[in-house]
Length: 108
Image 1 (cartoon, rainbow, N blue to C red):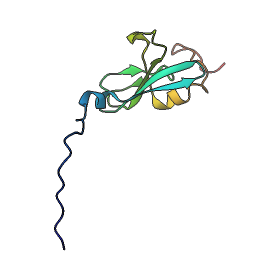
Image 2 (image 1 turned 30 degrees about the vertical axis):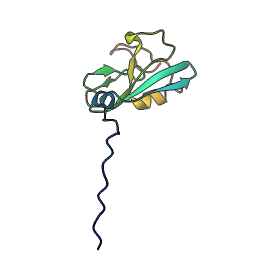
Image 3 (image 1 turned 60 degrees about the vertical axis):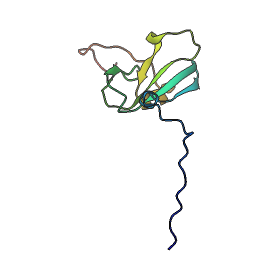
Image 4 (image 1 turned 180 degrees about the vertical axis):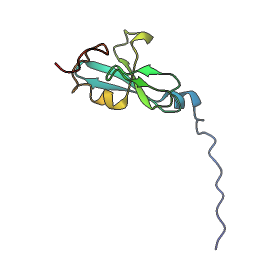
């Protein structure tokens, strides 16, 4: 058996940015209601509880989800919404949510 060849390591590789890894990578998605900036949040990066606008359920800390905001550049931080990934994909097929009290009838 011949010995393994030792190759010098490349020093020009950029180091990993821990903050960018935690935040996720942004992308622009086009939907019927316009273009949206979308960022996937990993389970390790999810540290707070949010309410999903698609299903009105909580997104608990440690749950992978995504953040979306209008891509027109006119909005600010208050325009960002945290969504379950499935709710975001199904939002074109879903009817608008109707806010009901706990004692209201569910059907009818």
